[in-house]
Image (cartoon, rainbow, N blue to C red; front, top):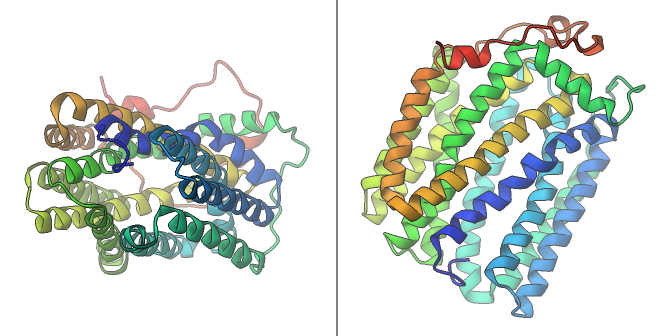
Length: 394
């Protein structure tokens, strides 16, 4: 995108169009994840992703790529990832036990972060040598490898539940569940706030790197590699140490404060090496906080609606990322990326203070805790959760 346009708005829109499908389609994807065979669904989605990546390769080979085609292609890839996310997270949760959730979360994030390290480095080296079309084709082949791996997986058979529901009634079921389980509302509120401010990284970090530090495409790849390296450090060396000594609330708070520090560094540091270090610091905080929120979410949902509830969490988070990308991209166009990063750090710190009463120190079995919730009839007069009141107390 940087080679085709100098517009900071279009560069920031990359994050927006990538996350918008999660807001639009994830709940539908969650219903499919609860009703269809999750393993087959994940395979079908990865075939779609391979087709989209192959289409980009063809367009690049024909020299037909422009900023708007790239944005459209990113959106279509985002559609695939939006349908994949609930099925994938539900499949992982179906395989591991509750006690293994934290470790599974670390491993799941770790493989993504390692890919985030290797991918940008390979792309940064390969694009100047063989062109973007070859990189897109390689990406397509990687999606097909995922299909082969998933087909070999043999997860335990688990009753997904509520087979008598119609497709559209399934949406009402998850709405009732969200309405009557205050802990889930806390998780949704915490995820919204976190996603709103973590969207600063994809929206502003590339803009600062390209416009203020004048990074090349290879250096931009190394910038995201630094972010991924920080995530790996956080997952391998830091998060287990923190979990052994602090509660989930405290671990999340420390991680978010680390992100605030990283934003301040990104706002003021203009030496390339130190800018990369600041990106790594952001990666550490991002992985730790996101992992704790994911574990908290899995601990408040029973398996029979796991796909839909996961979809709801993802939809809220990605909707916040979409909103945040627009906000921070527009702020960068008016105030500049550095000033916007500083403002984001200050506002994030204020949000952490306001959300201090939204605890994620959950214990207990969600199947026992929400017994009867999924079969109740919605009552317009029923009391709602005080999650938002706790967030903004009067």
